[in-house]
Amino acid sequence: MTASAERSATEAWTPSALQVERLAYRRGQARRSTLVAVASTVALTGVAVLALTSSPGWPRVRQSFFDPDVALLALPRVLEGLWLNLRVMAVCAVVILVVALALAIARTLRGPVFFPLRAAATAYVDVFRGLPLILVLLLVGFGLPGLRLQGIPTQAVVLGGLALVLTYSAYVAEVFRAGIESVHPSQVAAARSLGLTRAQTMRTVVLPQAVRRVVPALLNDLVALQKDSGLISILGAIDAVRAAQIQTSVHANFTPYVVAGFLFVLLTIPLTRVTEALSRRSGWLGATAGVAGAGPLR
Amino acid sequence: MSATDGGGPLLSIRGVRKAFGSTVVLDGIDLDVDAHRCVVLIGASGSGKSTLLRTVDLLEEVDDGVILLEGEDITDPRQDADAVRARMGMVFQSFNLFPHMRVLDNVTLASRLVHKVPRPQAEERATAILERVGLAAKARAFPDELSGGQQQRVAIARSLVSSPRLMLLDEVTSALDPELVGEVLDLLVELKAEGMTMVVATHEMGFARHVADEVCFLHAGRVHERGTPEQVLGDPQQERTRDFLRRLG
Image 1 (cartoon, each protein chain N blue to C red):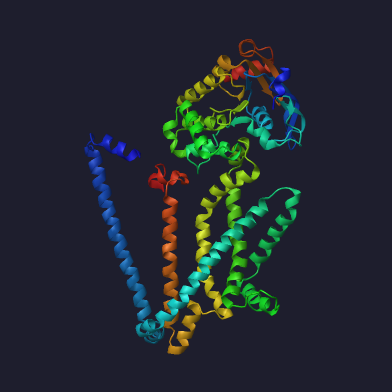
Image 2: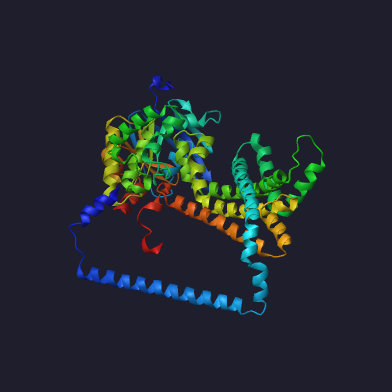
């Protein structure tokens, strides 16, 4: 908005000789930095590649881990498996966010009526944050169907997803709680002084600020979830990891594992970029992210 | 709601006590504020001015004593504290605007949520009030795109939007650059002229002199001296008051 005003103001201004000299110096410095960066990258990569390829076992490793023909043959199956990972992750992520937010809010409730809720939420977080995911997977995956109760699903994917939700909700609830506690009490005072109830204050003033602050931490958990969605393979679901395992035995070659790993990495990169772009948007964290002030120190 | 019929004071504070741990912050305060009057609280930091305002707005619970708003005991735990707060406007030293909301949404929030006014009407009224504080052009801005003085004027607009019976102003110019103090004080002078009832904690003695109907000097949680600005600021009777004013220069 103010950019156009600034531009018209600078039209009448020509930089002084001092500023011209400074700009030239900075350009020179920038060019030099780029050159140094390129040179050091090339050198480092060269050393790494050389170290790898000159190792005595490299020909064998290349054959059994980096075989392009096997990669091509395995790719469709691994991709099929990855599609399952993606769906599991998407569904679980939504459920986890809802459950975790509910847990976090339950832990902030005051008043004797809410004591059981508060205590249950605390106990839940304590238990599932302490239990290794793989144990939860095994207990849920093999224990739940063992109860032979009506309506309990028996598909590996559903049970695996349930285990992921149980564990990750506990982690993400703590992230939300940290965000809620990071909102300054004066914000609550301002909202309450307007006559807002405790619940209205939480919903319109505290939570929006809390959630925005914890987005990077949430993203971190989402990336972890993406990888851990591969663990449902131990219950028999054919996801990318399981598909790669099958392809590995079919071709008697480890390349499918590398393919799966490569695909997992590819998945996380856009996720990171989207969040970064989001947090730069004006108004996301107040306007600070979009306006001057951080300068060259940022 | 219409308990002022008897002609009693709008706000009546009787023997209010408040301690944080072993620190006694309010040590038996008595204060009456009649409708349309402006009472200014002066005193050093830690004398209890802020805490007094916060207890009136029920942001702190009193340890003892009674606060009556329009004749109603608002310190009674059976009171609906949210409804009581909605009848008062409070403005804070550090503005406390909601950084994730645009100026307009900051101002309409109470109307929409507390008074259940539909958004179009709420925005209409908010726009009128923003115009009144000279900031209608900033309705779409976020708080941290504004100067301190502008932010404080938005905060005042935000508390004015529900037509409060009483305004509580807690050192509202203390966080401002000197050249921005004037625009906020001018606004308070106008509010007073329109008949708003105000309790103002401030270090601005010029404001106290010109706008206050009554000045109270607080020290260690007690009202040490009270009277017209001429009396308290011009001819203080208490040694502590004289000390305090002398130190202000």
